Amino acid sequence: MFPESHTGYSYEDCMATAVWLLAQTAVRPLVGIVCGSGLGGLADMLKDQVVFNYRDIPNFPQSTVHGHAGRLVFGTLKGRPCVCMQGRFHLYEGYPIQKITLPMRIFKLLGVETVILTNAAGGLNQDFKVGDIMIIKDHLNMPGFAGNNPLIGPNDERFGVRFPCMSDAYDRELQQLAMDVGVELGYGDFLKEGVYCVLGGPSFETIAECRMLHKLGADAVGMSTVHEVIVARHCGMRVFALSLITNKAVMDYDSEEKANHEEVLETGKQRAEQLERLVSTMVTRIGHNNYS
Ligand SMILES: O=P(O)(O)O[C@H]1O[C@H](CO)[C@@H](O)[C@H]1O
Ligand SMILES: Nc1nc2[nH]cnc2c(=O)[nH]1
Image (tube, rainbow, N blue to C red; front, side, top):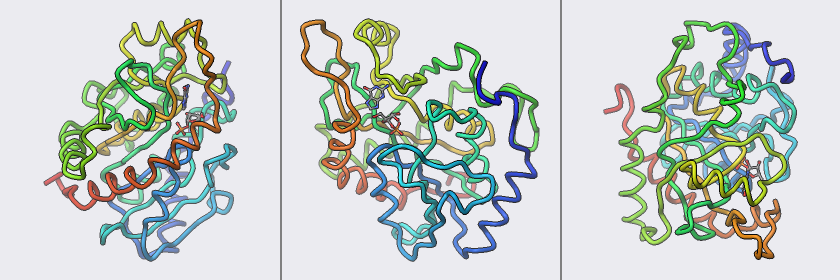
């Protein structure tokens, strides 16, 4: 049904990748960042970079999407050790769901405690504008409803429990921190919060689908993040995620608008600076070791 859907990636495989990476950099990251479409500039903020192309990392998939560079960048962000995925993997690229989420387990084995995920998304909430930043407070996992969940297959307790809780997936303290930092930076007018819905893609939604998702309680729709969140929470990392609203979902049969990837990348460029400042300021204020 799904590509290689039951071939997991063993603890030993993940450990081998983590050990390989740790042998080549002195950076011991506590924060892991995932850059969404057109948001790879976040990785460029890291100082004293050690960069790996995905193709050179054992067991790593390759980025195939325009706007996802395919580099794992280690470095420091205002003195804090970080690792940053400049490019993520999506279901529609044809990878098994376990493979697109593999980097979360490698983050864990590298010592990462907090994961910050970003994405580009279509706005369903009628109060949202293009360029708004939505702090994700919850998600709707549509592929999960159809039986496609990254934790399907044998469970290795060294990563986490068989049935992980998801009602606390998005850390509330980090949501509040983002709101506080955003307001301090003067971003209050375009900082929102809401529910992100993941679909498989790569086709964008029909008008009827957008209307349905909105009725179901989704504020934004995209094709990523949720699978990574599930795997990150399963192995006990703290999660913060945000969506840049890059386009308005088309909800009206009279509309002439058409979702397209060029607009997504263009909006990313326009908001890059604020998004980078928001994330980097958050990183300097995140406590570690028992989340102090
Ligand atoms: O979620 P990210 O990786 O930001 O990318 C989003 O942008 C692409 C569509 O333009 C899709 O891949 C969608 O998921
Ligand atoms: N599914 C989906 N993904 C997106 N990524 C950026 N915009 C969109 C959108 O409108 N729909």
